Image 1 (tube, rainbow, N blue to C red):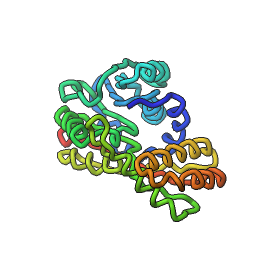
Image 2 (cartoon, one colour):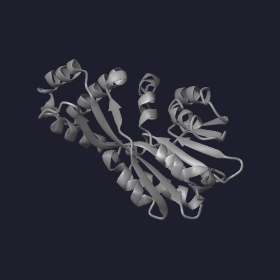
Image 3 (cartoon, rainbow, N blue to C red):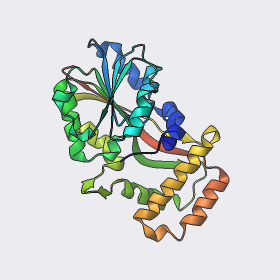
Length: 258
Protein backbone atom coordinates (compact mmCIF):
# COMPACT_ATOMS: atom_id res chain seq x y z
CA UNK A 1 0.00 0.00 0.00
CA UNK A 2 1.35 3.41 -1.00
CA UNK A 3 0.25 6.95 -0.17
CA UNK A 4 0.35 10.17 -2.17
CA UNK A 5 3.13 12.59 -1.20
CA UNK A 6 0.50 15.33 -0.91
CA UNK A 7 -1.39 13.39 1.78
CA UNK A 8 1.83 12.69 3.69
CA UNK A 9 2.79 16.37 3.54
CA UNK A 10 -0.67 17.41 4.75
CA UNK A 11 -0.47 15.18 7.82
CA UNK A 12 3.20 15.71 8.75
CA UNK A 13 2.69 18.50 11.30
CA UNK A 14 -0.21 16.70 12.96
CA UNK A 15 1.93 13.57 13.15
CA UNK A 16 4.78 15.52 14.70
CA UNK A 17 2.50 17.12 17.26
CA UNK A 18 0.91 13.77 18.17
CA UNK A 19 3.93 11.49 18.61
CA UNK A 20 4.94 10.75 22.19
CA UNK A 21 8.17 12.39 23.30
CA UNK A 22 7.93 10.41 26.54
CA UNK A 23 8.92 7.30 24.66
CA UNK A 24 12.03 9.05 23.38
CA UNK A 25 12.94 9.80 27.00
CA UNK A 26 12.42 6.14 27.88
CA UNK A 27 14.52 5.04 24.96
CA UNK A 28 17.33 7.38 25.89
CA UNK A 29 20.67 7.65 24.21
CA UNK A 30 22.08 4.98 26.54
CA UNK A 31 19.85 2.43 24.78
CA UNK A 32 21.33 3.38 21.44
CA UNK A 33 24.70 1.93 22.30
CA UNK A 34 25.97 0.70 18.96
CA UNK A 35 28.65 2.44 16.95
CA UNK A 36 28.00 3.54 14.32
CA UNK A 37 24.34 4.34 14.96
CA UNK A 38 22.10 2.84 12.29
CA UNK A 39 18.36 3.61 12.27
CA UNK A 40 16.00 1.73 9.95
CA UNK A 41 12.70 3.44 9.13
CA UNK A 42 10.13 1.00 7.73
CA UNK A 43 7.52 2.37 5.37
CA UNK A 44 9.33 5.69 5.49
CA UNK A 45 7.04 7.57 3.13
CA UNK A 46 8.61 10.98 2.50
CA UNK A 47 10.78 10.68 5.63
CA UNK A 48 8.66 12.49 8.23
CA UNK A 49 9.59 10.08 11.03
CA UNK A 50 13.27 10.66 10.36
CA UNK A 51 12.82 14.42 10.29
CA UNK A 52 10.90 14.26 13.58
CA UNK A 53 13.55 12.15 15.29
CA UNK A 54 16.38 14.15 13.78
CA UNK A 55 15.02 17.31 15.37
CA UNK A 56 14.77 15.67 18.82
CA UNK A 57 17.64 13.21 19.25
CA UNK A 58 21.12 14.58 19.71
CA UNK A 59 22.59 12.04 17.35
CA UNK A 60 23.30 11.89 13.62
CA UNK A 61 22.70 8.26 12.67
CA UNK A 62 23.04 6.50 9.37
CA UNK A 63 19.48 6.11 8.12
CA UNK A 64 18.33 3.10 6.12
CA UNK A 65 14.96 4.04 4.65
CA UNK A 66 12.65 1.23 3.52
CA UNK A 67 9.58 1.63 1.33
CA UNK A 68 7.87 -0.05 -1.60
CA UNK A 69 7.36 3.22 -3.47
CA UNK A 70 10.44 4.54 -5.32
CA UNK A 71 8.87 8.02 -5.59
CA UNK A 72 8.60 8.30 -1.82
CA UNK A 73 12.08 6.91 -1.27
CA UNK A 74 13.54 9.57 -3.52
CA UNK A 75 11.75 12.32 -1.62
CA UNK A 76 12.72 10.86 1.76
CA UNK A 77 16.36 10.40 0.86
CA UNK A 78 16.66 14.03 -0.19
CA UNK A 79 14.98 15.50 2.89
CA UNK A 80 16.65 14.00 5.97
CA UNK A 81 18.02 16.65 8.32
CA UNK A 82 20.53 14.63 10.36
CA UNK A 83 22.97 11.87 9.51
CA UNK A 84 23.64 9.96 6.30
CA UNK A 85 21.06 8.14 4.21
CA UNK A 86 20.58 5.08 2.06
CA UNK A 87 17.31 3.81 0.62
CA UNK A 88 15.97 0.28 0.17
CA UNK A 89 13.03 -0.49 -2.08
CA UNK A 90 11.15 -3.71 -1.35
CA UNK A 91 8.80 -5.73 0.82
CA UNK A 92 8.95 -4.59 4.46
CA UNK A 93 7.42 -7.84 5.67
CA UNK A 94 10.40 -9.85 4.41
CA UNK A 95 12.86 -8.46 6.98
CA UNK A 96 14.43 -11.01 9.31
CA UNK A 97 16.90 -10.83 12.20
CA UNK A 98 19.91 -11.17 9.90
CA UNK A 99 18.72 -8.13 7.94
CA UNK A 100 18.83 -6.08 11.15
CA UNK A 101 22.42 -6.93 12.01
CA UNK A 102 24.21 -3.75 13.12
CA UNK A 103 20.94 -1.82 13.46
CA UNK A 104 20.57 0.44 16.51
CA UNK A 105 16.86 1.28 16.20
CA UNK A 106 13.92 0.25 14.04
CA UNK A 107 11.26 2.90 13.53
CA UNK A 108 7.94 3.10 11.72
CA UNK A 109 5.01 5.47 11.63
CA UNK A 110 1.40 4.57 10.82
CA UNK A 111 2.51 1.11 9.71
CA UNK A 112 1.41 -1.57 12.17
CA UNK A 113 -2.30 -1.25 11.42
CA UNK A 114 -1.55 -2.03 7.76
CA UNK A 115 0.08 -5.35 8.64
CA UNK A 116 -1.33 -8.77 9.47
CA UNK A 117 -0.87 -10.52 12.81
CA UNK A 118 1.63 -12.92 11.24
CA UNK A 119 3.63 -10.03 9.76
CA UNK A 120 3.75 -8.22 13.10
CA UNK A 121 4.86 -11.44 14.78
CA UNK A 122 7.67 -11.86 12.26
CA UNK A 123 8.78 -8.25 12.64
CA UNK A 124 8.79 -8.49 16.43
CA UNK A 125 10.71 -11.74 16.29
CA UNK A 126 13.32 -10.17 14.02
CA UNK A 127 13.79 -7.17 16.34
CA UNK A 128 13.98 -9.27 19.51
CA UNK A 129 16.33 -11.84 17.96
CA UNK A 130 18.61 -9.07 16.71
CA UNK A 131 18.40 -7.22 20.04
CA UNK A 132 17.16 -4.05 18.34
CA UNK A 133 14.75 -1.58 20.02
CA UNK A 134 11.71 -0.64 17.94
CA UNK A 135 9.64 2.54 18.01
CA UNK A 136 6.28 2.28 16.23
CA UNK A 137 4.25 5.49 16.26
CA UNK A 138 0.73 6.51 15.24
CA UNK A 139 -1.05 3.16 15.06
CA UNK A 140 -4.80 3.72 14.82
CA UNK A 141 -6.97 2.81 17.80
CA UNK A 142 -10.32 3.31 16.08
CA UNK A 143 -11.49 5.83 18.67
CA UNK A 144 -12.90 9.07 17.26
CA UNK A 145 -14.19 11.94 19.42
CA UNK A 146 -15.88 14.95 17.85
CA UNK A 147 -16.21 18.16 19.84
CA UNK A 148 -19.88 18.15 18.81
CA UNK A 149 -21.05 14.51 18.89
CA UNK A 150 -24.05 13.31 16.96
CA UNK A 151 -25.89 10.01 16.84
CA UNK A 152 -24.42 8.80 13.55
CA UNK A 153 -20.82 9.09 14.74
CA UNK A 154 -20.82 5.63 16.30
CA UNK A 155 -22.17 3.98 13.16
CA UNK A 156 -19.53 5.54 10.92
CA UNK A 157 -16.83 4.73 13.47
CA UNK A 158 -17.81 1.06 13.63
CA UNK A 159 -17.97 0.75 9.85
CA UNK A 160 -14.62 2.47 9.39
CA UNK A 161 -12.96 0.24 11.97
CA UNK A 162 -14.34 -2.85 10.26
CA UNK A 163 -12.94 -1.50 6.98
CA UNK A 164 -9.53 -1.16 8.64
CA UNK A 165 -9.70 -4.86 9.54
CA UNK A 166 -10.56 -5.89 5.98
CA UNK A 167 -8.81 -8.59 3.95
CA UNK A 168 -6.58 -7.27 1.14
CA UNK A 169 -5.19 -9.80 -1.34
CA UNK A 170 -5.68 -12.52 1.23
CA UNK A 171 -4.08 -10.52 4.04
CA UNK A 172 -6.29 -9.70 7.05
CA UNK A 173 -5.19 -6.26 8.24
CA UNK A 174 -4.96 -5.59 11.97
CA UNK A 175 -6.37 -2.07 11.88
CA UNK A 176 -7.29 -0.93 15.41
CA UNK A 177 -6.04 -4.24 16.86
CA UNK A 178 -2.46 -3.53 15.83
CA UNK A 179 -1.05 -2.20 19.10
CA UNK A 180 -2.48 -5.05 21.17
CA UNK A 181 -1.11 -7.54 18.65
CA UNK A 182 2.30 -5.88 18.69
CA UNK A 183 2.45 -5.82 22.48
CA UNK A 184 1.68 -9.53 22.47
CA UNK A 185 4.27 -10.19 19.76
CA UNK A 186 6.92 -8.35 21.80
CA UNK A 187 6.19 -10.42 24.92
CA UNK A 188 9.92 -11.07 25.38
CA UNK A 189 10.71 -7.35 25.31
CA UNK A 190 10.11 -4.38 27.59
CA UNK A 191 7.05 -2.72 26.05
CA UNK A 192 5.80 0.82 26.66
CA UNK A 193 2.80 2.51 25.04
CA UNK A 194 1.56 6.08 25.05
CA UNK A 195 -1.50 7.71 23.47
CA UNK A 196 -0.73 9.88 20.45
CA UNK A 197 -4.02 11.25 19.11
CA UNK A 198 -4.35 13.69 16.30
CA UNK A 199 -6.21 16.78 17.53
CA UNK A 200 -7.64 18.26 14.38
CA UNK A 201 -9.27 21.60 13.71
CA UNK A 202 -7.96 25.13 13.95
CA UNK A 203 -4.61 25.17 12.14
CA UNK A 204 -5.29 21.63 10.93
CA UNK A 205 -8.59 22.45 9.20
CA UNK A 206 -7.42 21.21 5.80
CA UNK A 207 -6.25 17.90 7.26
CA UNK A 208 -9.44 17.55 9.29
CA UNK A 209 -11.55 17.96 6.15
CA UNK A 210 -9.47 15.55 4.09
CA UNK A 211 -9.40 12.98 6.90
CA UNK A 212 -13.18 13.28 7.33
CA UNK A 213 -13.84 12.64 3.64
CA UNK A 214 -11.65 9.54 3.73
CA UNK A 215 -13.16 8.32 7.02
CA UNK A 216 -16.73 8.61 5.76
CA UNK A 217 -15.83 7.13 2.37
CA UNK A 218 -14.17 4.07 3.90
CA UNK A 219 -17.11 3.56 6.24
CA UNK A 220 -19.55 3.61 3.33
CA UNK A 221 -17.33 1.28 1.30
CA UNK A 222 -17.57 -1.28 4.09
CA UNK A 223 -21.21 -0.62 5.03
CA UNK A 224 -23.19 0.49 1.96
CA UNK A 225 -26.24 0.94 4.16
CA UNK A 226 -24.68 4.21 5.35
CA UNK A 227 -24.62 5.63 1.81
CA UNK A 228 -28.02 7.33 2.18
CA UNK A 229 -26.95 9.22 5.31
CA UNK A 230 -23.35 9.92 4.29
CA UNK A 231 -23.73 13.02 2.02
CA UNK A 232 -25.74 15.05 4.54
CA UNK A 233 -23.58 13.85 7.44
CA UNK A 234 -20.42 14.86 5.60
CA UNK A 235 -21.87 18.27 4.64
CA UNK A 236 -22.82 18.97 8.26
CA UNK A 237 -19.42 17.98 9.57
CA UNK A 238 -17.52 19.97 6.94
CA UNK A 239 -19.73 23.02 7.43
CA UNK A 240 -19.01 23.13 11.15
CA UNK A 241 -15.25 22.92 10.60
CA UNK A 242 -14.72 19.61 12.39
CA UNK A 243 -12.93 19.64 15.73
CA UNK A 244 -11.99 16.00 16.28
CA UNK A 245 -9.60 13.75 18.17
CA UNK A 246 -8.40 10.78 16.11
CA UNK A 247 -7.01 8.03 18.32
CA UNK A 248 -3.51 6.63 17.84
CA UNK A 249 -1.03 4.86 20.09
CA UNK A 250 2.78 4.82 20.05
CA UNK A 251 4.68 1.71 21.12
CA UNK A 252 8.29 1.28 22.16
CA UNK A 253 9.72 -2.24 22.47
CA UNK A 254 13.17 -2.74 23.99
CA UNK A 255 14.52 -6.30 23.83
CA UNK A 256 15.67 -7.44 27.24
CA UNK A 257 18.93 -8.60 25.69
CA UNK A 258 19.73 -5.20 24.16
